[in-house]
Length: 623
Ligand SMILES: Nc1ncnc2c1ncn2[C@@H]1O[C@H](COP(=O)(O)OP(=O)(O)OP(=O)(O)O)[C@@H](O)[C@H]1O
Image (cartoon, rainbow, N blue to C red):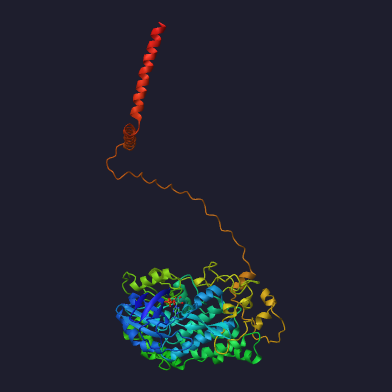
């Protein structure tokens, strides 16, 4: 066991992320740590050496120590200690024995709308508490939600615990991420983060919206063939409502995914709204609950401070007001949050920001997991006309790339400066499933099967194309979110699914006339493109075989000679012969000296002499 600092021992590695390695550890038996028992098991995140070596990160680490330590909520993994010793920075956290949501989804597939809403309601609770304390998570994603287990009524139940609070902020050091870079996870990155605007609590709400979408559909709403395309989509594309998404849930998601941060709901109202949705979309929902769910939009309250800030920003854009005033000051400390983003609203940074904002930073984008975005290259659309200097990869980027190689969850976004000037292929919109095909079956258009980001595009084989009716509650019904929902029955499909004619077998299989009102009209049809394409099938043209082309025979490689300049023809053979002769000579000497051969030779000579004598005497007597 390796010691960490003077109080902890590392046991085994639990996993490695972009910012460090998480270890299962233990408090030393002979020390006292407030809130922890001697010998207690803990999780220790040892930050990467590059972070520990950065004075800016160390300073921030120390400065935020008290904030991180006091952040306490049932759905937040508690940080117990921060270790700063020599070249080592580590966070000591409560150990959560359970999978993270990323791996859970990969193994079990998407959640039902009710389970997804209830799970995210608890995540939103955690966000509300942290936002009230001035902490923006900034890297919300399934990998940062651990599923803890608790016993209730003799049954194991799972509930989410948000981890990695403040890590993205710690890692975002000017010394590590240069101008125009950010630490984040592209699939979950808010548009304002993507283009370098100040990041407020609204970035977490955006991340929550992406996660919610992913939880119930199995894939994030914005995808693309690479980081650039994904970030572009965040900035420019509107999310598509999947056909099977219940309307109230879609209302919530759509509001969270607004491009304008001021239009997103607060985390508090999000948590409340999600519980209302969960109560009103089930087949057994009471009519009043169904009505409440349909009016969920009214519960989603925006932050007036953000709205005011947006107004100031708009004024600044037109009249040149001080953009630093854009930041809201209520509820959390956005200035602090912004200052550590590497896009601080200092005059210099503001200049930088203008440059970044001109960039379709989507264009600078990334596809997944924690990623450090490289600086915006000169020559990109909107970039200042600066002399293009070849950039060597920042050590942090190299480290992150290595981390990506080790851990699928982490990717680094390098992009070729030329790539920015090339038009990006926008990801195809959500393609409606064919009749009889499940809403989530198969990857989106333009994506090969099994190619979905982090494998989410792939649906587990146990989910036939039957809509939510096929979706199991997590852990085979084990997941029962806290807060009075623990005893909910397994999720059943919402009424509208059961009553839709002409759908896959799952719909027909639902009991009819169960006394529930049809809560929601069928969702709006899928984008016009897809049905049109199906309704008017174009004659498929067979691709013409390529014309046979004459290919020059490749010149033969010159024969390789030995490095020995003196080449004697036949020397190889001669050497072999000499070797054989030598071996034969040695064998002959050995035979002569170490066998009775000389004696036999003497006998042979004697017999030969006798034979000659006998022959001569025989011939003499015959004459
Ligand atoms: N408190 C904890 N208790 C138990 N396991 C944990 C804890 N914190 C993290 N882990 C596990 O450690 C592994 C690495 O966590 P980490 O946060 O470094 O990874 P990540 O979120 O995938 O990476 P990153 O966000 O840096 O890209 C994950 O598999 C996670 O489940």
